[in-house]
Structures are given as structure tokens and as C-alpha cells.
View (cartoon, one colour):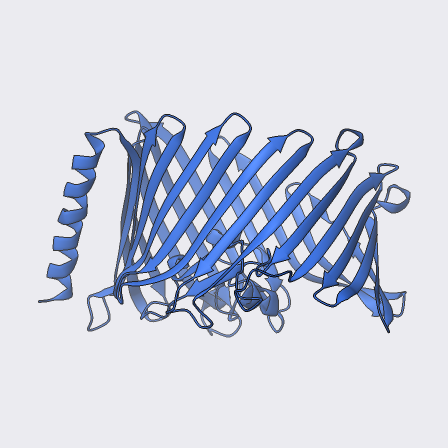
Length: 415
């Protein structure tokens, strides 16, 4: 059976399921996109599809999220949320369909008595996950003081903390944002027994309208671990200069860091800067990126330039289309364009029609050494049509230095 036949059968199956669910007391969305590679032997280069279905019963909502890619059924998540007066609950369960494995479950119970919120986080990983099966809890108490000027939070770790946990899969297409799932509660920090694992006390306040204070006291199983105090001085002397002082005290060591920064976002013009220096001394300013954007009568023009392709990258639109350190992008699992592209010029035009909106967009990438006119690297052109808020279709083509390299067709349905 060819990939073309599989894709068509899958599309009709999902469309039929969506139509039947839409007739009942359900809400949801279905998004799908197929990528074609005209110059390659394999006609299909990518496929992504996400089906979200929700059932509302009074104060209770049940949900299901199914993710598909070209390699098959990627993730299956079930969720349940409820809210009644001052009590709320939110939970998720994650499965890996290809092996039929249970991966993760999380539940968050909250009791809100403003300005105090009591939260209980619980999480579990399955035997298919490294270190599993395992489970843990976090008891969190948050309160605001002086009308929100200051806040105090206590997080007690019982086999888990709130540092976050991610699940990733490999696939033939590495550019899909569906490959990684991230959750808040991490139950892998301890052995899984019901025992004290640590405590974190956090105090935050804003004083004089220009100083942010954050104090974090951390305890481990054996007692005191560290005390961190961060002072952020904002807009010193009504200038764009910010200074952050970070003091860290442990049982046998003490350290401090001095981090100056500039706020250089002037609305339509944003300059990416980094202050150079060491030991509390500023020796220079590095400008590593420039971004310009302007909108008029439904037309938006945007230009972003990466001036230091050695260390910095431009992230994809799903991650903000910003310039950031390559190391930060990798650490945060942000997708980014090839470092060969140092500038992207975008134009988007939106016009109303037929009860919806027509959108035309073109993104032109310029490289560092293509040898072509203006060092042109590639151009993405696309058009999308939305019919109200329920249905939309889109088509995008990619032309690069090798020719017509990709064609993506997508649709979105809501009910």
C-alpha cells in the first residue's frame, strides 16, 4: 500500500469521525497538513494531524487529543478538568500508541480562597519510561500581600517537583512541533516512596516601582541547601538600562553575579543587544540582531536580521520568530531555521471576503554565501482562506536554490 493511499484513507476516516462527533454534544478541532516534495522520489515529505475532542457535562469537561505524523500515530492524550466554586481540577494522561504504553499521568487540584491558593500536584510515569514506574506529589501554597505588590509561595516536594518533564520521539521529519510533549510535574526526582524530598520558599515583591526582589530558600532531605536573592533594578535613571544582582549562599560557599541589560524594543523597531564585560564592568555593547515591523490597512511587513550567525539563530513562527542563542534554543527544544539564513523578510496581506478572511504571505530568506542575487536562499509563499471561525484551508510552496522543493496543503475544522 502506497503512502498516497494510506494518507487518503486516513483523511477520510478522520473526516468521518469528525462529522459524527460534531453532531453530538461535542466541541473540538481537527487540523491536518500534508507536505509534498516534487523533486524527491518519495512524494510525501511530511504529514501532521491533530484531532482535539471535548465533551462538556455541566462543570466537567472530558477531552481527547490525538497527534499523527507521517510515521504513524504519535501521541494520545486524555484529559479531564472540572471547576465548581472554589475547587478546580485539571488532569492529563499520555500514551504512546505505537507500543500501547502508558507514559505519564498528572493531576492538579486547587482550592482558591483569594488571596490564598492551595494546590496539590500529583504525577506518575509508567514502566515504559526510564526510571519508572514512579510517582510523587507537590503541595503548593501561594498567597498575595499588599494587594498583589508582594507574594509568598511554599512548595513542598514529596517525590516530585515542578521543574517540568518532557517526552520526545524521533521521526523521519524532525521539524514537527508535535514530537515533544512537556508537563509541569516531574515525579522522577526520588525513589517513589512517600517521603520528604525538599522544600522551596519563594518571596517576590516590587518596591518603589523600579526594583523587583526575588528570594528563594531551598531545603533538601538533609536540611538547608541554599538561599538565593535576586535584585532587579529596572529603567535606572529613566534609561533603558536594567541591572540584575544575584546572590547565592550555600552552606560552605557564596557567590554573586552582576548582569546588565538594555531594553531596546521601540515598538516597530527592536534591536537585540548584549552588554559585554565582566566583574561588574561594562566594556561594550554587542548588537546581534535587528527587527522591523509595520502594519497598514491589513498589510504587515516584517524584517528580522541575525547579525551573529555563529552563536545566534532565528526561531520558527511557532516559537516566536525571535533571535536567540543557539544553546538556549536547543535547551528549550525550540525549532529554528538553518544558521545559513541570516535575514528573513516577510509580507502578509489580509482581506475580508465570503464571510471569512483571505490571507496571502511571502517569506524570503537570505543566506550567507549562496552566490545568487542578494544571497537569496529561499522563498515561502502561501495563501489561506477561512470561512467564518469553523473552517479554513491553506496552501504553501517553497522555492529554494534547488528549485521547487516543497508544497504544503493544510486545513482546519472547528465545531
